[in-house]
Image 1 (cartoon, rainbow, N blue to C red):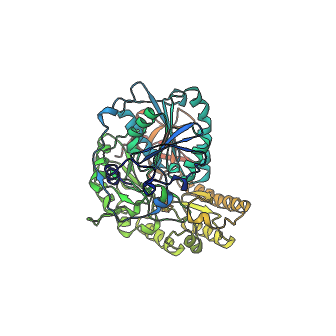
Image 2 (image 1 turned 135 degrees about the vertical axis):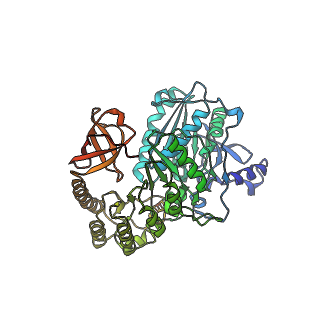
Image 3 (image 1 turned 90 degrees about the vertical axis):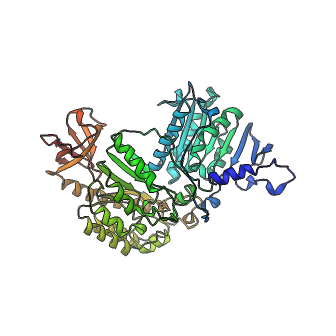
Length: 536
Ligand code: SF4
């Protein structure tokens, strides 16, 4: 549901008569409400009493609805405002958000932190000190979900000790019926559950949870609008994330994202350009453009023929040293983008291009919509246009039906492309996805053995590539002290290689030249080139 549909719905709200069965929402199809009693039904909301706690459902998750792709156009709302009666709600209170998963989630946390600050809350680093705890969750893999349920369990004694503490679960996991059901059944002390499409409704959801003392569930299954000017508290002052689009329409068979993040919606170019300019004027040195499938940027515009290549070309004119983007989908990676990236400048030569498998048959089962040959052809084009490009990738091993030969095709593709590095994963089914209905017929020991072999290859090629840096002078964006040694500074090259070196702290936040003296397993050791040269 988007904001317009929501407002329309609210305008049409009528008090539900329990005899009017047609207008009742049948939550029993999602949740196990045996033993639950309906306490009240009004304004489209239903309140249940379950195991001693009232639970108000404003909107419930529905993955089938999340999958639907309608023709309605996207609404662009260019002003976010907190209603006057909610301002100051957080005076004297503290919040903490624990974030799991991808950069998109990290960035959502920056937005929610901005909303908390506007409400008058202060941030804190410890759950013991917080008045509101949010878990911003990730649904991409089973172990990410297990971690969150572990954390929920740890918070129970705290809530018992301090009943006024508010605990909320948001992010991708909240979009899943099974997760919400598990919380309803086993973790009644949770106060708020909301999803990825309505984080701008945080003030109202908090207010409702405070006033009612009930568990409030508001998970929109239909994607939300594109809302501009949301407040943000950015994590650092050197590197910044900028969302360029939301959602994904690719429906890879193993992936839950198209259900939890909704259909592809691009932000307008002028809004993105304005945000990047603003960050440049504040002294940011690197921008990462974010989207689940950034190469589909602009495809949803009805009035503009404008893609990621066009956007990158315009952004390259902004006076900021580094611009990257993530994540790419090979199917939508077009020649226009390659042509623009080849011009270099502040557009970085590191491309993360998830391949997932080197076998065309497995790619078909994954519904990746490209073949091994198409992927290799694309890599060939990129390497021809940008000979120094560094390529990294994601690979899943042990997808249903993957034979030894098909796994060998992944190994041979990896060798052929010579990726700089890769995120490698063992396939695990995600409930609600088409692949979860396939028989998970590769024994775990085979999956593990394949992963081990692949990782050895990844390490071997990464080490070889790092070795080539020895003696070279590279540009490094200095981010701060090394985690292991405060006397050593650390930063990243344009190709995302971590470099450690000794230098005065005055170079933090600058792009400087460093000579590489030693390649280690994952990192590079360097020395400052005698005279500091700031290259931006
Ligand atoms: S393109 Fe990425 S986010 Fe979209 S369905 Fe495929 S794996 Fe998921």
